[in-house]
Image (cartoon, rainbow, N blue to C red; front, side):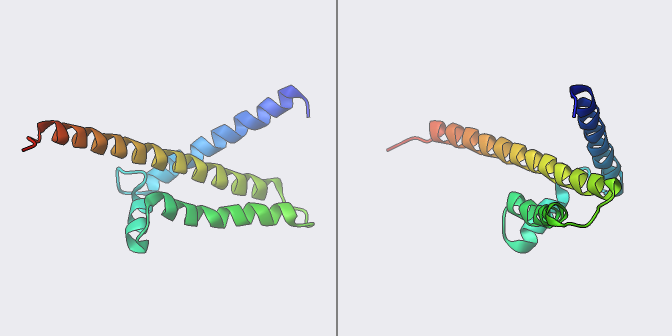
Length: 120
């Protein structure tokens, strides 16, 4: 595949992933895009990251099954499965970002608290 065609494929995939993520945002009533993963985490007694990983596993298996199959698969099916998987990775990135932000805030609060504690 030449460079120009490769770039076209990548750009089209990025647009498709963005379009799906934006359309999915409209389907959910909550302002928090990570709401489903947080609720799933509460239900399962795990972290949002772990809940997302569980949901993403289905998509990973689906892509893997397509790759291992000798059957012809339509480009539409490939696009759907690849887009889903990319989007779960993007959602994972957001979960990791939020976890990191929360951790930093908690650490900052601990430092403030420790600074204000009088040791006797």
